[in-house]
Image 1 (cartoon, protein in one colour):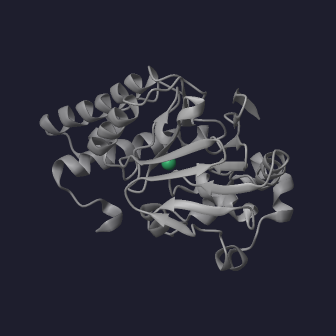
Image 2 (tube, protein in one colour; image 1 turned 135 degrees about the horizontal axis):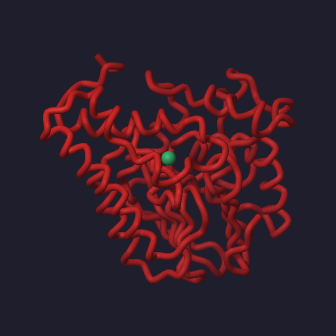
Image 3 (cartoon, helix red, strand yellow; image 1 turned 90 degrees about the horizontal axis):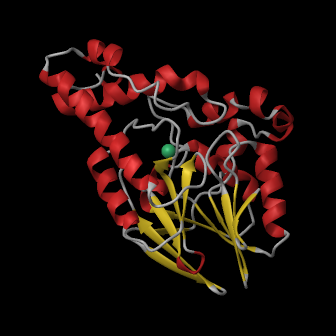
Length: 290
Ligand SMILES: [Zn+2]
């Protein structure tokens, strides 16, 4: 894994989120888990080589951040916001997260097929949070402080994890660095407020949910990307474009690639981003919920 500071490690080159861990004087804290089974097992072993895992913190409920929890059973208490707990691997009309995780196995982790749990086995104990909070939460572990800040927008239970001693913040998907932003069911206005909250932190390193490690300056780029989506769809609605016309004509596919391993999702992302904002701005009920 990539070493960001002497105590902070992350992995930005795998399909899925950027799983990370921080070494303290009294064990290790894991932040999000790899969705690919063999990578989850390997990361657990690497983290435990530095000491026992004290906590596993999830920054959001999306499958690529939490599915790997299954392979961290017995490795420290799982800590998450109430909004993550409530949505943890819940099947919705839009997405079956268990199937979406499984879909990556043949292409991205063929060896993982042997340890991929069947559905009943998985749901019997997916290793959800046992320390569940609302608002913010601060954990002191050895010589490090973990400030879990509620930063809703991308998802309702979204948090950022600020480790002041390392001058680092883990933002989860509040930041997609140099790759496509997934709006899905996000609240973009809350998201922009949360970027402001993260900008106020005194840090050198921003570890995004996807893409390379970056600096606080990229928070401005993320805000611009969100505002560009909003402005483009607002203009489409003002011109009277239908949902279909908006999906066809409002598109930021040329701006960034999709994060590793999910290039085939480009049209899906563009469609959902445009459609979700169009639905919001027109008050329409999306077709899948009619
Ligand atoms: Zn996400």
